[in-house]
Image (cartoon, rainbow, N blue to C red; front, side, top):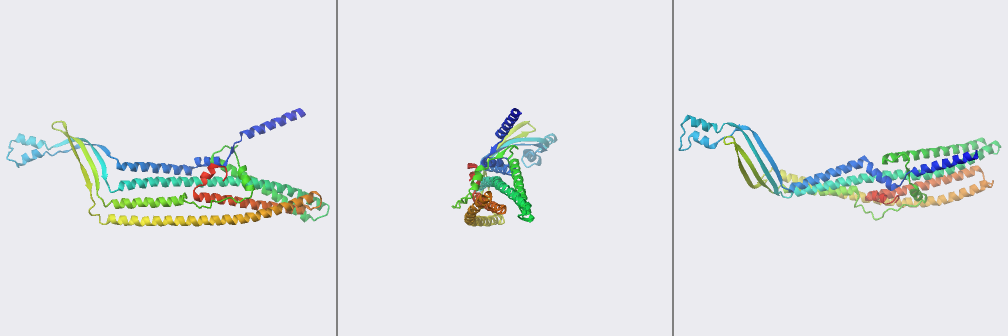
Length: 454
C-alpha cells in the first residue's frame, strides 16, 4: 500500500512539473509588444499612416512629366474648305458642271472619323504650388505617424497598468493571507474564552466577524487577480496557460520606495505638441500655395497624332509643340482673400502650438509637485509601518507566551495590514506617476520595451 502511495505521489509531482514546464512566463515588455501588434486601433493608425505615405508619393509625381494616349472615333460632317470655296464662287475658277459640283459637295458629307494621338505635358513653373503640396503631404504622413505612436503609448500604458494591478494584488494577497491566518487564530481563541466565560459572546462574535471579513477580502482579491489575468491574456492573444512574470514589479513595489520622475521636463516628443507643430507647418504650406496662385503657370505641351482621310483611306500625321502659359490677370480678389484667410489660420495654428506648450509645462510641473507630496506621504507611511511591525511582533510574542490577549493580537495584525496596504498604494501611485511623466514625454513605450520594469 505504501509502495502504491509513493508511486502516486511521484506521478503527481511529475504531472505538476510538466504543467509548470508548459506554463509560459510573459514579461511586461513582451506583453506590451504583443498588445501593440494585435490591437485593432494601432493597426488602423498604421494603415492610415501607410495611406498618407502613398498620398505623399503620389503628390511627388506633380513635378514629373506625363504622357497620355488619346483616341477620338465617331462620325460627323468633315468640312472641306477647298470644295466650299469652289462651290461658292469666291475664286476666279467657276464650277458649273453639275457632276463636278456634286463631287465637291460630297467632300463635305457626313463620314466616320478616327483620330489617334499622344500628348506629353510637363510642369515648367507653377510658383511653388507643387512643392507646397508635396511638403504638405509628407507632413500629413508624419502626423499620421504621430497618431500611430500615440495609440501605441496609450496601449502600452493600459497594459502596464494591468501588469501593475497583477503585481499589487499578488502582494496584497500575501498580506491578506497572513492577516486571515491571524484572524482565524484570534477568532478561535476568543470563542474558547467565551465558552470558558472569560469574555462575552459579543467579543467572540466580533472576532469571528473580522475573520469572515478577512476571508471575503481574500477571495475578492483572488477573483480580481483571475479577471485581470484573463483580460490581459485576451487582449494580448496569449493561451490560457500563460502566466505573467510580475516578481520584478512586485519587488519594486514591496520596497515602498518613491519612483523617480525625470526632472528635465523634455516634452519635445509629446504627441500633442508634435501634432500642433505639424499643423502649423502644414498651414505654412497652405500660405505658400495660396501666394503662388498670383504667379503665372507654365507648362510644356507636345502633341502628335494622325487624322484619317475617308476619301484616300490614309492617315495623315500632325504634331504641335509649345509652351502653355496661364496668368491670373483678374480673379475678383479671390486670390488675395484666400491668402488672408490662410494667414489667419497660420496665426491660429501658431497660437495653438504655444498653448499646448504652456499646458504641458503646467501639467509636468504639477506632476513634479505631486511626486514630492507622494515622497513625504510615503516616508511617513514607512515610519508608521515600522512601528506597526514592531507592535505586531511584540503582540505575537506575548500571545505565543500566553501573556497577550487574542484581541490585542488581532488589532495589531489589522493595523499592520492597513499600514502595509497604505504603503503599497502609495508605491503604486508613485510608479503610475512616473509612467504618466514618461507618457507625457513620449518615452513610455521605449522604456517598457527596454526592460520589464522602469
